Length: 317
Image (cartoon, rainbow, N blue to C red):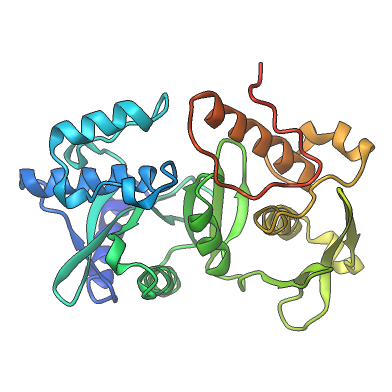
């Protein structure tokens, strides 16, 4: 396990490498008050983009004052959510995304080591200004982050995201991330030494394919509100329990974002608490009900796929 000075040195090497990425990753000047305020406004707008249905009602972070940040935060942030000054962060370090000499967005990076699997590169606060979206910047950045992990003594690229932030969830799935867990939020990971998941989606079947061939290792079909789950593992694949623990939840999330059923039947639904951290689709289904109930109870708009068979309660005890 690396100590803090070693992690700091590794972080510096990561940051130096990413300066040459496209878009470039450039440190935020923590002594520049106006720059820190703009960074905070971008951070806030990453929340607002997923909580305001009408794009015309969204503020431009470049025009937000400190009072605007406070007012929008009071209106739409939930308990425990806070837009902090980057200068006060003791975990992630703040960066601009720069293309053609212009700031186009933000990201925060950190290298940490939990003592297993080696040090990881984590990122958060990925935000692009509106006119720079759908131009491939986010996909190029994610490739650059993964290439940095592959080129350095890092084991994985990791992030946490919110089920309700559907564009982000779809972006990360398409970029080859797997599900690590859904204990509190969606924790996603792209392992250095594993190929990305290959998911085949058709109108009648969704399948997680083997890395080297087009045969399914797990597949799913649907029958009305019921999910049919098919396990195609070989004996050797059944023995690889660590890898398997990432395959089941990853296919489950793919099913969810496409609005497929997540419940295989009454017996598996009754056991859903077994998979409340990660695992089979019923665990994710229960978490989705809870996440969305919490958001609705606090007056937030929920813009997610409707999953057959879920009750969508307005609140949880």
